Image (tube, rainbow, N blue to C red; front, side):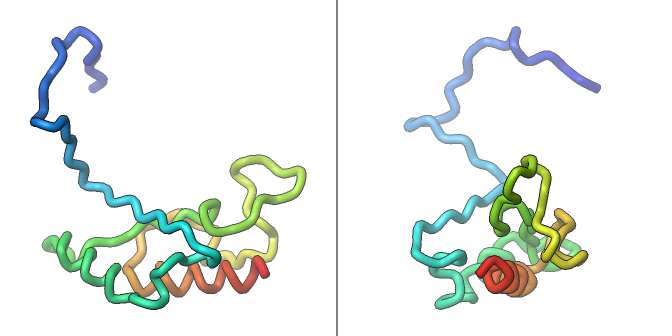
Length: 110
């Protein structure tokens, strides 16, 4: 059920203002597609273990549009034709699977 939140009064979360999220964004500026992840692949495994639930370690979002080059003349939802079927789906994957897919996408983009 949709509930309108615009009528709620302002809220002070903490000093300084902080909002904790269940999502972790990993964005590393680097000359390669994977940032520093290949040099320390255990960092993702450690993060996944820290978010372990009853179904096992936490998972990561594989979003192909974040790893593949844009399709010339294509739209936002387009993924290059050379991306295999397995790599075209947006889905939650384990840490090692994320690294393997990112490396494969980087090879295909090259």
